[in-house]
Image (cartoon, rainbow, N blue to C red):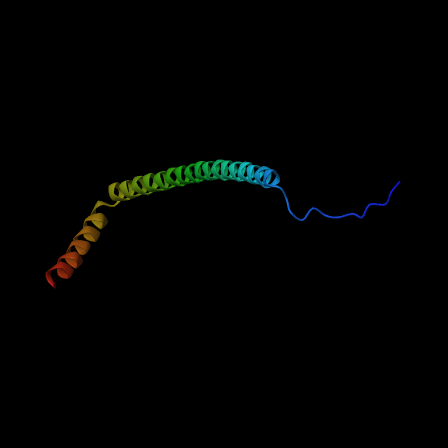
Amino acid sequence: MADKPMTLNADPSIEDIRKDLDALKQDFARLAETIGKTAKRSAKDAAGGAEAAAGEVSDWAEDQYLQLRCTIRDQPLTACAVAACLGLVLGQVLLRR
């Protein structure tokens, strides 16, 4: 066997460069698709979390409303006194413009 010196092909052919560019395009397309899927999934998760939080706030507000309603029914004079005081304070604040 004849000993041939090993040389590296330092000048890639145009066809090799095109193949590499095509592979790179495909990789970027797959990357963009993966990022899109991840973003959609994250948006769905965030929407689900926001929906759950809104439900919790709604339940809390309804409980507070029912508790206030019961308090007003049980102590109507106190409720009237509190409402009158709040009216006086708001009236004073609004008149001092």
